Every structure is written in C-alpha cells, then in structure tokens.
Picture (cartoon, rainbow, N blue to C red):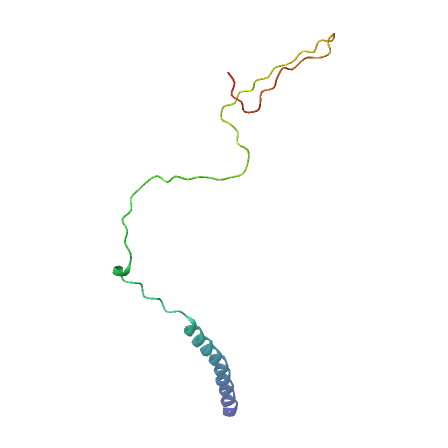
Length: 100
C-alpha cells in the first residue's frame, strides 16, 4: 500500500511539473515583451508659445447648384389670336439680366 501512495505522489509531481514549466516559460516571455514606460521629457525641453483668441475665417468648396435667397420670376403669357398667323416676339432677355 505504501508503494501505491509513493507511485501516485510521483505521478502528481510529474503532472504538476509538466503543467508548471510551460506556464513559467510563457510568463517569462510575456514579461520580456512588455514595454517599459518611456520617461517624459523635462518641462524645460518643451517649446512654449503665447496664443490669443481670434475668429476663424473658413471657406467651403463644394459642388452643386447655387440658388438665391430672394428670387422673382417675370413671366408673360402671349395670347394667340386665331385670325392671325401667330404672335411676333420682339426679343428675349438673357438669363441673369437685371431688369426694372
């Protein structure tokens, strides 16, 4: 009976040893790969600049159509008289021309 207990304890030791060695090796490799924090530069080495608050002018460049905020349409209906050959149009004002 003492022989059985002695065999089990050897097996248990080998089992623990086969489990502990890979865990120790993995922990050792992980601690090697961890970066040490870099030391921060001293305050004297930093560049200092005096700033002030100001408005920021921006420009936006975008594609698309531009529409006015105020727009007036000038239209005229032409009445066709049945006895005549049609209506004579004297002229057409170009698009965007200022009118009174």
